[in-house]
Amino acid sequence: MRNDQFGYEVTVSSPIAAAAWDKMVLAFLAHGATTPEHLGTVLKEAPEFAMAHAVKGLFFLMLGRRELMDTAQEAYAAALIGAERVVPSEREMGFVRGLGAWLEGRPSQTIQEMEAILARWPEDAMAMKIGHATRFILGDCKGMRASIEAVLPTYDAKNPARGYLFGCHAFSLEETGEYSRAETAGRLGLSLSPDDAWGLHAVAHVFDMTGNARAGLSWLDGREHAWAHCNNFRYHVWWHKALMHLDQGEIDAVFDLYDTEIRSDRTDDFRDISNGSALLMRLELDGINVGDRWEELADISERRTEDACLVFADLHYLMALIGGDRTEAVKRMMGRLQRDARNTTADEMQARLATPGLSAATGLEAFGEGDYKTAFLNLGRARRSMQLVGGSHAQRDVFERLTIDSAIRGGFLDDAEVILQERLTQRAGRLDAYASARFDLIAESKGGWKQAGRLPAE
Image (cartoon, rainbow, N blue to C red):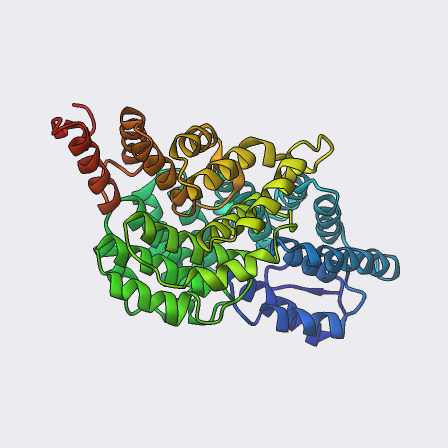
């Protein structure tokens, strides 16, 4: 038995496995592409290390792909077998139980297992990050923040994960509206861990949410090293940069980033599909022709209509199908969503299909058909609980924009204005280009009605 880099015992005897475990944890915190390589070394050198198998299973579940459920189940079986041969510590068994809970459809119990670990071993950065990531998938921003703030005092200057912890804190602060503190925490985290892509991206979120795209571009420019080492998360950071160029009206730069970075590899990871779909939809809402870029997203999404792992993924697959004009695939997917929404025995993920998933999907379908009244009524019904589909405010903003545009096109001008005001309040009262254009459009539609609606009521 050896100690890890945080001083906690790990039930491995191999020094190679122990060193690879420490490297894997730091790579995971940094969203590093080398994470699976290090984990593979651990499992090769310590095949009976139950916690490593459990972490592998949790990683696969986070990928939100139906075919990987069996792989995660196999990892769980391997963890249980390993636990019989080399008895894990109670801390390590928490990861095994966490994997088992998620496989049973209870990711909230996975979070509870991570919190139980942190209560006794607060410097377990793997438990911290897995809990953080799971809460993100479930849309629990308040829980993310509370969890991080509970362990913050225990991470001193010698802790190798301290910078990554600040990065997680920055993101949770941003998602709960503490923009100034989020920026400070993100900058601090990156100064301690220069490869902390999550913290860097948290600061990018701050600039998005405060309507300061030019400052956001300045923040990202020259810091590419902080995300160049990443797994597919690097595409997401490029996506943020593209959003900033879009807000500045720099469309050529948006398309360049889309083609050379965001969709250069044409991966089928749902997070990458969501990047592409959300960006193309934003462009089209602004009246910009995106050419044939929907086609490859729709091709991939046609193969995912039965996936049913995450509502967030389903909605972006559907968006791609609508953008690519895949009518039959849209109908097929809507049928599956309707069946799943009626399933009273659904797990925690699928239960979110009923509220807000199905309403959002119905609104998307109607928008694609040009039925803006139906689109608005359904998207409007879903918007109050869209947090439950997971993702960030920036990611869910495409649905907010679709709701607003549906309202405007459907003649619900007062409703559109109310939603714009609420969006403006959430964004620290700062207008971005989208909101400014829509307030102007509403004013013109009302026959030159005074533009007091452009700013919060005095």
